[in-house]
Length: 148
Image (cartoon, rainbow, N blue to C red; front, side):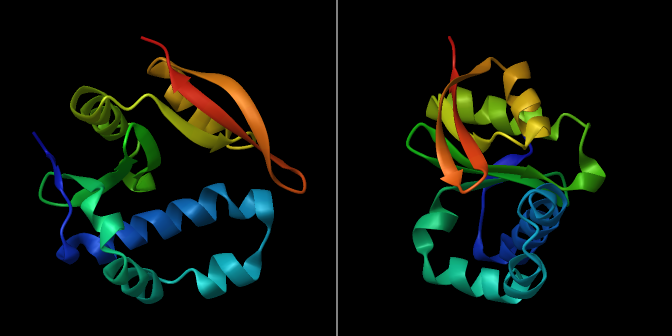
Protein backbone atom coordinates (compact mmCIF):
# COMPACT_ATOMS: atom_id res chain seq x y z
CA UNK A 1 0.00 0.00 0.00
CA UNK A 2 1.20 3.49 -0.80
CA UNK A 3 -0.46 5.14 2.21
CA UNK A 4 1.48 5.77 5.39
CA UNK A 5 1.46 8.02 8.44
CA UNK A 6 3.04 11.38 7.73
CA UNK A 7 6.31 12.54 9.26
CA UNK A 8 7.86 15.94 9.84
CA UNK A 9 9.85 15.40 6.65
CA UNK A 10 6.58 15.34 4.67
CA UNK A 11 5.34 18.70 5.92
CA UNK A 12 6.72 20.91 3.15
CA UNK A 13 5.24 18.64 0.47
CA UNK A 14 1.90 18.46 2.31
CA UNK A 15 1.91 22.27 2.58
CA UNK A 16 2.61 22.60 -1.16
CA UNK A 17 -0.31 20.33 -2.01
CA UNK A 18 -2.62 22.12 0.44
CA UNK A 19 -1.68 25.62 -0.73
CA UNK A 20 -1.90 24.85 -4.43
CA UNK A 21 -5.34 23.23 -3.99
CA UNK A 22 -6.49 26.06 -1.73
CA UNK A 23 -5.60 28.65 -4.34
CA UNK A 24 -7.27 26.71 -7.15
CA UNK A 25 -10.45 25.79 -5.26
CA UNK A 26 -11.02 28.50 -2.65
CA UNK A 27 -9.56 31.69 -4.07
CA UNK A 28 -12.32 31.82 -6.73
CA UNK A 29 -14.91 31.50 -3.94
CA UNK A 30 -13.51 33.90 -1.33
CA UNK A 31 -11.34 36.15 -3.55
CA UNK A 32 -9.08 36.93 -0.59
CA UNK A 33 -5.73 37.83 -2.17
CA UNK A 34 -4.16 38.72 1.18
CA UNK A 35 -4.84 35.26 2.60
CA UNK A 36 -4.34 33.12 -0.53
CA UNK A 37 -1.14 34.78 -1.74
CA UNK A 38 0.16 36.51 1.39
CA UNK A 39 -0.59 34.60 4.58
CA UNK A 40 -0.78 31.16 2.99
CA UNK A 41 2.89 30.26 2.50
CA UNK A 42 4.73 26.94 2.74
CA UNK A 43 7.23 28.03 5.43
CA UNK A 44 4.66 29.55 7.79
CA UNK A 45 2.29 26.61 7.33
CA UNK A 46 5.05 24.08 8.06
CA UNK A 47 6.05 26.06 11.17
CA UNK A 48 2.43 26.09 12.36
CA UNK A 49 2.04 22.34 11.80
CA UNK A 50 5.30 21.61 13.63
CA UNK A 51 3.94 23.46 16.66
CA UNK A 52 0.64 21.56 16.52
CA UNK A 53 1.64 17.92 16.75
CA UNK A 54 -2.03 16.86 16.77
CA UNK A 55 -2.23 17.76 13.08
CA UNK A 56 0.72 15.65 11.92
CA UNK A 57 -0.44 12.79 14.15
CA UNK A 58 -3.68 12.64 12.15
CA UNK A 59 -2.31 12.98 8.61
CA UNK A 60 -1.64 10.12 6.21
CA UNK A 61 0.10 10.54 2.88
CA UNK A 62 -0.13 8.74 -0.42
CA UNK A 63 3.54 8.10 -1.22
CA UNK A 64 4.74 6.05 -4.17
CA UNK A 65 8.18 7.62 -4.04
CA UNK A 66 6.63 11.09 -4.25
CA UNK A 67 3.99 12.35 -1.84
CA UNK A 68 1.03 12.95 -4.16
CA UNK A 69 -1.82 13.46 -1.71
CA UNK A 70 -2.84 13.42 1.92
CA UNK A 71 -5.79 12.98 4.22
CA UNK A 72 -6.29 14.37 7.73
CA UNK A 73 -8.60 12.33 9.95
CA UNK A 74 -9.97 13.21 13.39
CA UNK A 75 -12.13 10.51 14.94
CA UNK A 76 -14.55 9.53 12.19
CA UNK A 77 -14.33 12.89 10.38
CA UNK A 78 -12.27 13.73 7.33
CA UNK A 79 -10.80 17.19 7.99
CA UNK A 80 -8.83 17.44 4.76
CA UNK A 81 -8.30 15.35 1.67
CA UNK A 82 -6.11 16.79 -1.08
CA UNK A 83 -4.34 15.36 -4.09
CA UNK A 84 -1.75 17.35 -6.00
CA UNK A 85 -3.62 18.67 -9.07
CA UNK A 86 -0.93 17.21 -11.34
CA UNK A 87 -1.80 13.72 -10.06
CA UNK A 88 -5.58 13.98 -9.82
CA UNK A 89 -7.69 11.43 -11.73
CA UNK A 90 -5.15 8.69 -10.95
CA UNK A 91 -7.21 7.00 -8.18
CA UNK A 92 -5.12 8.59 -5.40
CA UNK A 93 -8.16 10.27 -3.84
CA UNK A 94 -10.02 6.97 -4.03
CA UNK A 95 -7.14 5.20 -2.29
CA UNK A 96 -7.06 7.80 0.49
CA UNK A 97 -10.80 7.79 1.11
CA UNK A 98 -10.96 3.99 1.01
CA UNK A 99 -8.07 3.84 3.51
CA UNK A 100 -9.93 6.22 5.84
CA UNK A 101 -13.23 4.34 5.62
CA UNK A 102 -11.66 0.91 6.13
CA UNK A 103 -9.15 1.82 8.84
CA UNK A 104 -10.83 4.66 10.73
CA UNK A 105 -14.52 4.13 9.93
CA UNK A 106 -14.79 7.74 8.74
CA UNK A 107 -18.35 8.63 7.99
CA UNK A 108 -18.60 12.40 7.58
CA UNK A 109 -16.95 15.65 6.55
CA UNK A 110 -17.84 19.26 5.83
CA UNK A 111 -17.52 20.72 2.33
CA UNK A 112 -18.28 24.13 0.93
CA UNK A 113 -21.40 24.29 -1.18
CA UNK A 114 -19.47 26.05 -3.96
CA UNK A 115 -16.79 23.35 -4.03
CA UNK A 116 -18.87 21.21 -6.36
CA UNK A 117 -15.88 19.19 -7.58
CA UNK A 118 -15.18 17.94 -4.03
CA UNK A 119 -18.85 17.23 -3.33
CA UNK A 120 -19.12 15.23 -6.54
CA UNK A 121 -15.99 13.26 -5.59
CA UNK A 122 -17.36 12.37 -2.16
CA UNK A 123 -20.75 11.41 -3.55
CA UNK A 124 -19.05 8.99 -5.91
CA UNK A 125 -17.86 7.08 -2.81
CA UNK A 126 -21.17 6.88 -0.99
CA UNK A 127 -21.28 10.21 0.87
CA UNK A 128 -24.47 12.29 0.78
CA UNK A 129 -25.35 15.82 1.85
CA UNK A 130 -27.41 15.64 5.03
CA UNK A 131 -27.58 19.22 6.33
CA UNK A 132 -25.91 22.58 6.01
CA UNK A 133 -24.69 25.56 8.01
CA UNK A 134 -23.61 29.07 7.15
CA UNK A 135 -19.83 29.24 6.90
CA UNK A 136 -19.34 32.88 6.01
CA UNK A 137 -21.53 35.69 4.77
CA UNK A 138 -22.36 34.25 1.33
CA UNK A 139 -21.08 30.72 1.81
CA UNK A 140 -22.80 27.57 2.93
CA UNK A 141 -21.04 24.48 4.20
CA UNK A 142 -22.60 21.04 3.80
CA UNK A 143 -22.38 18.15 6.21
CA UNK A 144 -21.69 15.12 4.03
CA UNK A 145 -22.18 11.69 5.59
CA UNK A 146 -21.32 8.23 4.41
CA UNK A 147 -24.30 5.97 3.93
CA UNK A 148 -23.41 2.35 4.63
